[in-house]
Length: 284
Image (cartoon, rainbow, N blue to C red; front, side, top):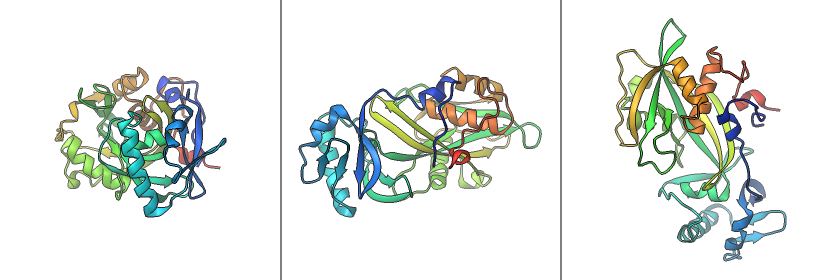
């Protein structure tokens, strides 16, 4: 899968490819699975039984359950050193990005230290005007207590895909937690795009495939947050939601998801034209 090329357009698209750190490729089971910042390589020499720090790559030598156990030990120590932050106690998969095979289990927060691929699931909640034409979009504002991007505008539903769940299962679960939507209310959920971010962030590297879904809601349905992670939810005209994405009022991933939705539905996005963002449209 080839990520969307760099774009001289909206800021969120440039940020989605922003890289400043020097990183060394990470290999597990003979697959390229991520990368580690050069300044963190010294810390990995504490585990010669599990890690080979070579001039051109870092190699994790255990496999399967042994790799899961090794990652558990190393991640706990890296957390104590302050190199892994925003610990979640939430298992994520260590993916082979080339074939979507799961190689091991790891703590969610550690993915950005190791620069490994994570999956996200986002949903554009909208209200139609004329049939098939979005007129308004539900936009959530993140709680000020969130560990990442507190107070920023966000999609109605969004979250990381944990170990053992599919992107669609995650959206349906998050649909209740973030918007108070029952599964029956999400029966019209439609899979739309896959977007890919690869950028440096304070925690390390965010390499994420965002599985995007669209959900048309009836005008009388009012989403209500259940888990305290959303400060408010507003129903905005499409043009205003697009403006938030362009003005960097949204998180980078939410802005990208919003602009992708707008382009797919024929809205004008300055600097973008009709260019699709879906990485599936750019496969070799």
